Image (cartoon, rainbow, N blue to C red):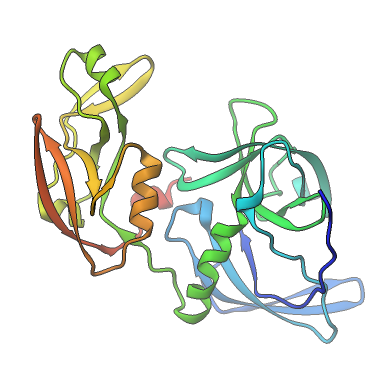
Length: 293
């Protein structure tokens, strides 16, 4: 990788942490420097894993600013460094590589994550994940409690995508259909001995959501197949506005392109029969899972 030096300038900064959603000012001393920063906007509407705050920094001197990179250009095997304050040890740096990309963590976030083996410990959350050129490609977020050297970072593109909304609107408006599920295919049908149409099995329909108002059905029969729990009996979503849906990532990616208030046609399979419904996209509300620890 060739590192190119760019002129640095002050930027709007985003951090992941449990920042209060207020507009209170804080003062931080760094040596002889006194810096005043103010919480402008706070986004916590997509679960705690994308809990991003927008800050305004007032300083008497020009401050160096990290350059935000393009996480779409990150590749497995790239060298990365995680910076943070683990257990209160300020400005600690740990080194590793990108171990995986587009990792979905069910029950944690719908945002695909960067996986890294760079050690991430309590206190690293909110710190930058940088490439070998010092460019920020992610924001350190969490680790797996069931294994070693498996950490996750929010891709910096995900954080950048909401900064304009936070600055100009004051909040992030996310389209929402109100369904939650998982991919199913013919293999599952062979195991449970019943016909299964490949698509997105709707397991949960949130009360009052666009899906609920349109009559989409969620699951009602819980079974465990090869260690995975499925909630069967719900509709199987196969298309949104003509776009095939075959996985959770397909569903999330398509919903992100919708607009609040837009009417969209979805194709479902219920009891083996296809049917079409029209849903009116609404704004994603705070959900109970957003408040879970």
